[in-house]
Each structure stands twice: as structure tokens, then as C-alpha cells.
Length: 559
Image 1 (cartoon, rainbow, N blue to C red):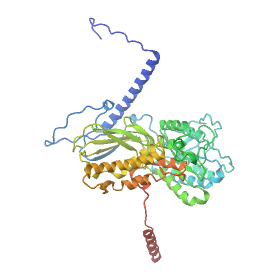
Image 2: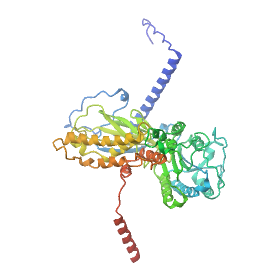
Image 3: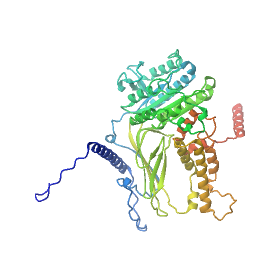
Image 4: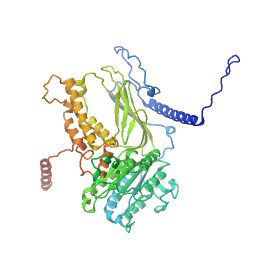
């Protein structure tokens, strides 16, 4: 309390109502973000290893540098002696934003014009049933079916598509797969044979089904598997046919590769807010299903988009095994729910962008509704301060997530780099796969701002700039007509040219809009080990395959 001889504090000056309201909202937002950063930093501090004690022979550490204002409240990462460290551990339940529960799996199938797609229902039902049974036995997830109690499933019909609601609470509609497995397999068999067999209307209420899935998974989060083969034409977020080959290669193609209705992006954000990850399976023959509009559901929620072109009954032997294998992998691979990711760096480096389903600024945490063992997130860095030559700047990635069994875990990956001012050393240790992966992601995420022609030219220009800089700084004494390539990047021209010819960026009308949208979604989650084969397909010798087959046949005959 102030003393008697001190002047009394002056009353605060009242601000205008509109300005005060805006300032209060900004202050609340800043405070919320600060509390979130402090909570997450505390969780990381509990799991981070202690730095190695310096020896007497080591030099004094460099003077402490002033951190940028955006990172002032973030503790610097430890300077680790190890080149790479991975740590993972469980977190106590009180640090979770809501009660820990096993995430649910929800499946939605388009049954419009069912008679023409019986083979789709047959293969997807069989694969989903087998994979769900494996997941229930500990294969990596918990499957659930809509049930009304007992061992028999009940069908509920919600006729109002404008305002979707659940007929019962979510807890009453979801049961463990172990209790309803036989009834669920019976529903799969009915869908394959008799259920909706008389349907003739080619209408699908895709948006209404996704809103119902959001309401159903809101209490616990989970995963949504969607099987679709027609254009959503009724209910909320209905779409119309807009594919026109005359727009290919023009500026109008940019709009064709973006959602026709911004409501699809808003729906994806709403699903991500309740930690629901969506994976979509699209089946096409010559029809247009507008995957550019529905792609945000998987790209922004950590799911995966699957496309099966020429999914006609007569070619079932081609795409049927692929569908079964991919459903099995989708349901049984390791999966993380309700994740929050942060990447931190030592002084001199800072995160520029996160390249995932969309390009996110590097000064924020990344909410990851779902992440699987096959997905990857690209991160770009900026060199914004002096780094001592020969030092070891560190990069640390921390992911807080929930397992399929409801356990809250944190996974930390710390990598120590080597700083050098030698350009030959930089080119000698360049990672071609990582460079190509980032180039591919940046091109895929730039389709909303540039035409395909400009993106192809940008990929070639980047390759030319990298090699020209190598010639200027590392091989200036060679003759002008001699081709000089760094050993680590000698295949960069081949891969850069191939990147302009794959379905992601290829010119012409042979790559339809749906196929390109599927390539864009795949490029945004592809890892370095897969992007090389995607950009430049692998070649196999038919001679060696035939010889191996003949040898195996001869061995079987003699046995």
C-alpha cells in the first residue's frame, strides 16, 4: 500500500468502447498464446537432457546474444554433445486439455448409384472389417461402430440435411469394436449385397455426413474414413461440375485447383478443432468428383487422400488389391492424435515456414490433429544471425500427442549440425532428397498463387541458380564450356526436369483436375524416402525379374 505522503495514483483514462473491446481481445489472445507457450516449454523442460559439462580444455562460450522479440520468452535449446538424440516418454494425465479417452474411428460411405459400384463396396467393406479386427487386437488403433446397444446394430436416418444433429448422444452411438464386431461385419455384408441395392439417385450429401462425423467425434476426437465416388450434389456444401479442359494451362486453372466453396476449408478447420483426422478414398472412372474442394478435409487434419482412377468393375483386379492394402495400412499403422508440434533452433537460425497441408509461419506452434508413420512435415529455416565457424548449432523438434490407447506422450528429436563458412563443404554434404522434397512441397503449396507454367519455370530456375553458384564459388578456374557439377547434386538437373513432367506440374490436358489435386495432396505429406521415387520413377530390369521367376519355378519343380 502507498504511504501517506505519496500522491494517490491517478484514475485510469477510459478508452472508447470499440477501441477498448478490440484491445481487450488482443490482450486476451496474447495472454492465451503466452500461457500456451509457457505450458509447452515447461513440458519440454521436464524431458530435455542436461547439456554435457564443459572440460577444462574447452574455450569460453561466446557472449550471450540478444534473442529476437518473438522468441524472448522461449528458453534456448541445450547445446548437446551428441549429434542426434531421440527421447520419448509419457506425460501425466493432468497436463492433457481434456480427459484421456481412446480415440474413435468413424467410416462414411457414399451409396449413391450403388448398383454401379458394388465392387467398391465389396473390397472396401472386406478390407475395413479385416483391418478393424486387427486394430482391435492391438494392431495400433481402436475401431468403433455406430450401435444402439446389444449385439445388433440399428440404423438411424436423419432426414434434415440443412441442420445436422445426432439422434442420440455420441456415447450411445459408439461402442467398442470387441462388443459389436460381429454385427458390424454383418452391416458390411449387407452393404455389399442387399442394403441400398435399389438406389438409383446419383446424389451424395458429403458435407452433411462430415458435419455428423464432427458432432460424433467432438467429445473424444478420432479418425474419419470416407469412401466417395460421386460429386456431392445435395445438402450443405454441395458442388457443381466445373471441370473444363479449356482452362488447363491458363490462369483460370488456379481456381480449379482451389475449393469451389470456402465452407470446405472452414469444415476442415472445425474438424481439426475437435482433433478429428479425415482420410478420403475417391473412386473415379471418367467422372469429376472435385477433389480440389474436398482435399482440405485431409490436408488440414493430418489425414491422407487416396485416389483410384479407372475404378471400373472390369478393372477390379488392378485397383482392388491396392485398395485393400491401403485400407489395411491406414488402420493398422502407428498413429498419433491431438498433437502439438514445435521446432526450436540455436541462436543464428530460426524457423521460417512449416510446409504441411498448408504453409504456416515459423513463429507459432503447429496443431497436428493426426499424424501417422507414413506422413512427414517439411520445415525451412532462415540464417538471421552470425554463427561461429566450426560450432554446433542445434535443431530440436518436440511433438506432444496421444496414442491410440489414450496415453499422452511427448517425442523429442534433437540434432546437432556443423557450421562452416566453406562453400565446397556445404555442397559436398548437401542432401539431394531433402532439397527435392522441399522444392516439391513449395511448388504444391504455390498453386493458389501461380500458374503451372510459372511453377515449372521456377523449379528450373532454382536448379540453375544452385549450380551457377557452385561454379562461381567452387570451380571458377575451369573453362566456361565445361560442365561442373557437385558430387552430391550431380543428379539435380535430372530430378528438376522430372519434377516438371510428373502429374504434379506436367503441362497438357492428359492430367485431369482430380488427378492433379490428388498429386498435390500427396506431395504435401510425402517423406524424403518416397519423394525421390515419386519425382523420378524407379526402373527395374525385366530380364532379372524373368530370370528370378524361372529360377524359382525350377526350384519348385525339383522340390
